[in-house]
Amino acid sequence: MELALDIQTESPLKLQLDVFEGPLDVLIHMIKEKDLDIFDIPIAHIAEEFQKYVDLAQTLELDRAGDYLSIAAELALIKSRMLLPITKEDEEDPRQELVDRLLEHQQMKEVSKYLHDCYHLGRDVFVRGADPTEGLPAPPPPKAEVDTNELQRVFNFLLRRVPRPMIPSSHQVRKETMTVRQRIVWLCEQLREQSNMSLLQLLGETYEKHILIVTFLALLELSRLRRIRLVQISEQDIQLETIDDLEDIPLEEVEDFDNMKMVQDQLDAHASKKQKQKKKRKRTATPKRQGNTTVTPITTPKT
Image (tube, rainbow, N blue to C red; front, side, top):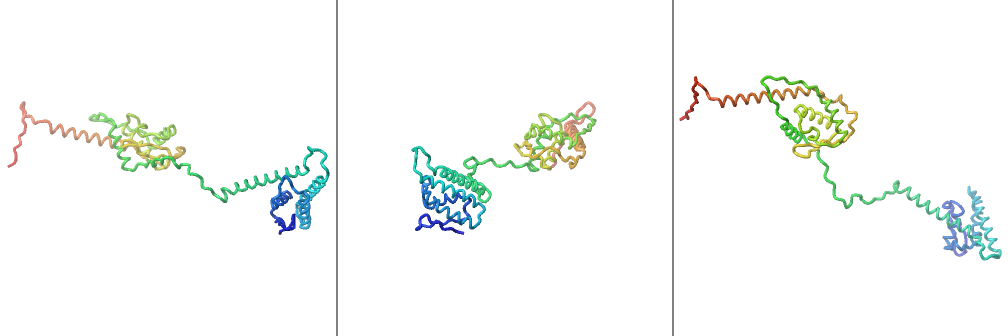
């Protein structure tokens, strides 16, 4: 609904009732519409036209009609006070209090609009911000995890570093009790203290073959469970990087077979191979003897 208010008959003032939140909104709209100076309000004209708006508000039974009546009464009071002669030079302008209220109300409206826009920003409207990485050097490409061939090369290199034990003519291999599950628990303790470390750093300078084997099996299990990542840092070493919580490892899912059976088989095969090679070299290098005379076999070339 629209209402035509005539401050000057040749230029009607049209007010949309549902856009005003109170009587001060109406006054500010009147002042802006006629481009009036808020510090020098023509109270007589404003009071008359505002009264017309109040009469319409009462007809429409607006919920806040009382607020409009209060402002209308205040305008009438200011109008009457301005008709009185000024008795003192420093007497305050009767309009000053109303002007202050209008300025404060206008400021609050602007702040309210700003907060309203901020509320919609990020909900209905999205602004593309500056790229925080713009101008910075490109990050290095992520390290790739080792594949089976790389892991096997590292294992073979470390295996060659194991000191060769003295193999007696008859020996017994002492059965160790270390299992993959036990080694996983030990590895988790080490990685909790230092989340990233190399395999050589973990094993130390000296280690036994069965320690190396069971360590590799434990590393493969932790990698399969996605708790660590194995990254090759050289041809002879790999990096262990923690990528998930090392608590609550499902050890029941780990196939805890007899690892030392594998170690024992490898040691027996290694010892047997060395003894056969030693006997073969000795048999080839020793000449035949007859009595006290050494006879060197003579081979004649075939014709």
